[in-house]
Image (tube, rainbow, N blue to C red; front, side, top):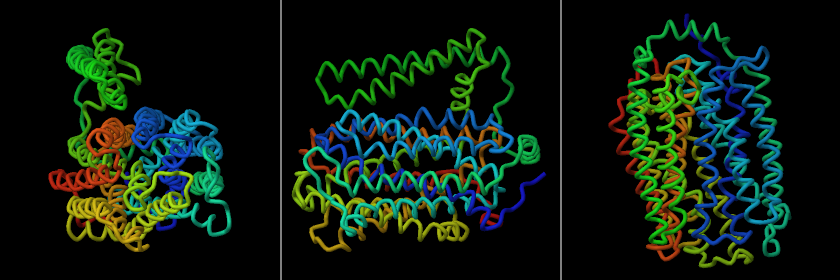
Length: 510
């Protein structure tokens, strides 16, 4: 039994919800640092305030993926219930965020908003794997890239469009400008409407059909026999590794405390390393005590036995998203301080620069939308990993070029660096998922797409932990140097792509 090939408009409908999701995501990326600074945050403290976003994704996406694999609603199907619930919550959050009265409230709202966006976003990746045959998946993820680019372009332009229409772009100290507020309101409505379109206009295969597809497809993924003896042995191994990681995490946390290092580092030592060790230890203890028939142990063990291609792509994703996170949190500070020479959030010059960052983000997303359907063509003529390599190298050089801008022309600031970044962004959103989906079992598609998010989230947590420290201790508070680090990281990701063992079939890849 094989999945049928879908027509253009069917793939369009199943991907359309990403237009709204990315509008919300883009408004968050382009404006939250501005909101934090307006509410009194210092530039070196911004990464730690952003930590809520990746930490939320680390927890939410694999859990949502795990449960969506096991969900079936007679009318809404497997993935669409999560699309809908997440869209409702995210839309409400987008209305509340720009009305945050104080900094701690805004940080909390970022946590809630990002969790809600993740609930909607995670199943969309599995949706392509569920509904499309292997030879159409590159095209399906390219369609998602198109909507991501288009939605982000519109959302990033909104503050400037509203300013041009006469909406106030400045406000008293500690107050979010109306141009930002109304942009979030528009994004909240668009998020819900776009996701509703996909929920209403798309269909899903039943669990029985998905089981038949899985049985008929030859998959490389295999976990072997898992009996009580296997779980006991695996549990002992996990417990040993978990305790070792715990010790390293606690020792590193003590070092941060003892030497009075920047508190951002606690995110890495206590939040990531120590918590990871604790999760391994708990899973190991449960398996040793024959308590392995639960979701937590399944999630940890499936992470341990993920396919080879996924492990290779993990490093590519790590350095790609480290770079992106540095761009999202530091471009506003870099442009306003390095190019415009001001950090006064109440000044017209600062807000002009901040709006230009919105234009820059809009432009790289426009480029991504325009090149989204060219990437499958290049991948078919060469290979997917070569296509991704080229895109990432161009993106790295584009990001690094911001340091060298001294000319205040629109093209030099808003376009030149963002052409390469846009090409990289289009590829990041499609090519790794196309390479990955063919290596995943259909019954675990949602979960593994969620776990793949670890390699998006972990680098963001690392960036949130160390970039503030680097900027404060080594870069004299100059945010532009964080962009140089980010550009180098993206080039490294491109080089690592060349060693991925992608099983691309050039005769069927569309």
